[in-house]
Image (tube, rainbow, N blue to C red; front, top):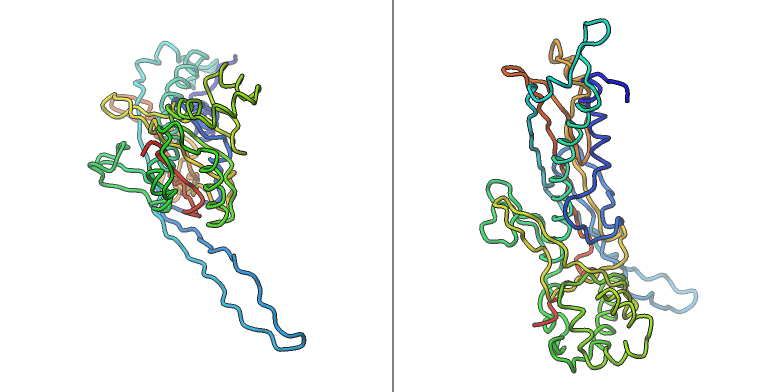
Length: 366
């Protein structure tokens, strides 16, 4: 690899390019379609439209008679405040001194491959925290109904101690205990519970409530045990060799009741104290439709990022050297006293569930 200029390595476009390709550092339980951005706003505030679908049928009138008026259902604009994260880390120049040398003319410093690799490693480590935030926010939104942050901006596993709360997303009647979502349903800890009938009830309820057919079931750790211990489900699995073999070989449920079942029990994040916090309850299942911008979307806000590490001569020149980046961003600066490379990174974003009754999150044990 040929040596490159330090400016080339630290330029915002290059860093943002590295940024987009880094994999997340914690388990991501959702397919990529759940992360689609459908709206960009200038800063950290925005809104989305919540449209009430038409479920009624047209009236009949006598042929040739005047038309009758129809009252259109409303469109509600929902204002939201995006979550903004911005952190920095520093790389002392002393760590890179052995990796930097003058160019052939002796007038500029260049940085060799090992230096590029070291800066890239620092970038990857920084980026993981923002990707982890994105994954955690979506997972917690589906399984808890909200995102909670303390006064220092740390993500919390519950509402206790929260100073910042993201907008509530799931209808209150769609999240909670099985017996509250499906009235009179037997809990899954009861081996005689009629789970197939419950799945049909839930499917019918979802279609009638929103028109969005359920597609995915993201499940907690205990769900396969409840399904395979259930009298009716065990009988079904014993007659379906492929699904039974799938479970015996992987310990997972894959396809059931016309739903794609995906394990979500891997979901966790490490909090500011180094403690792993579970994002998914052992007895929870989150049922969602196929991801679509009709009911789900991310809003990304804009943040000003310098295009180069050069020092501007005046304010006007500095403004011309700035671009607005939506969503994730990263740039670098070289600061003095002592000479240090400062990486600034973050995101301005918010996941939103635009149809609150499209998602069901159920604790099947209560």
